[in-house]
Image (cartoon, rainbow, N blue to C red; front, side, top):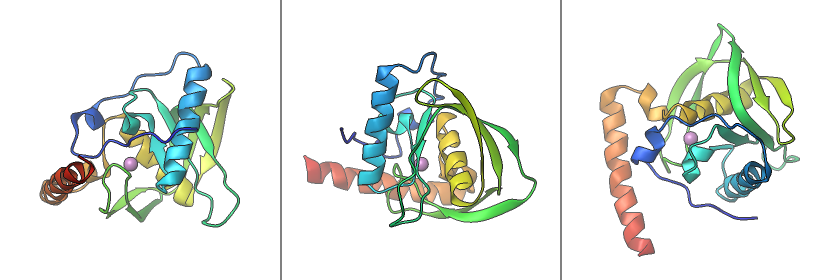
Amino acid sequence: MAILPIIWAPDPRLKVVSETVETVDGRVRRLMDDMLDTMYAEPGVGLSAIQVGVPRRVVVADAARQGGEPRPLRLVNPAIAAASDETAVYEEGCLSLPEHFAEIERPAEIDVTYIDETGEERSLRAGGLLARCIQHELDHLEGLLFVDRLSAVRRGIILRKLAKQKRARLRESA
Ligand code: NI
């Protein structure tokens, strides 16, 4: 078990397009376990590998209700196979953009294909918070943050605040 440091925006690493995982080996499994530990510690409902500095198409998520039984998901090379025409608006946050939130519209339901931790090809249908979370994490794999879905003006305001927050945090931890 390890808690990994999360990269905060703005950071050029968060703009990198992540690469496909060729083999789900022990290293990938350990990465996913560490990412889950990190996500639960924050706490968050989803985390992509690029947020801990690993540019591979790996995502973890758990959209179980707070206080409910944990339902960790480990998704390797996740892809959206289908998305509903119906959309939903949710307030999104991100562990790489601490303390910032914005309402984002996305498809309400999605079908996702992925490879699980045993190397098995799988698919799932997600709605509600899980659909939201997976779409947000898939954006990370393309180098996109939720602020990239906002107007340039709103994005600029949030990123400038984040840059300031980041300098203050780095000073604190120095
Ligand atoms: Ni995020």
